Amino acid sequence: MSVLVTVKIKGDVAAFRKSLVDHAADLEKFAAIGRENGAIHHRFGIGDGYVLVIDEWESVEQFEKFFGDPDMHAFIGSMGGDTSQPPEITVAEAISSVDEF
Image 1 (cartoon, rainbow, N blue to C red):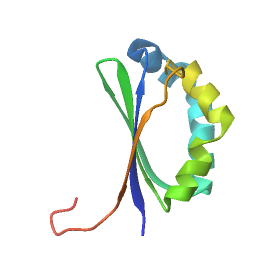
Image 2: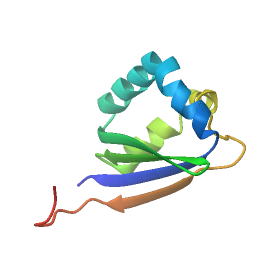
Image 3: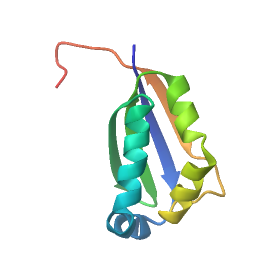
Image 4: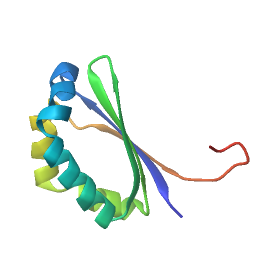
């Protein structure tokens, strides 16, 4: 059974937008590592002063291993994320319903 994970990271949204282009190769590298380690789906969103990561993982343990890597936190900082404070992380069991799409 998979899990849905949201990660809300405060930071510089303009720097993050620019980093999507400037760090595209790094994003692809981390996406490949994530998929190899249990990531099923991944998406970004942005709000007022924060980036929202929306993922689906095979297990919470796989997410924690991936997200706990010090290289990941350094990368978050290079993308405009504020690493001086912990992100808000929410984990929920993924369930199916008839209205799913």
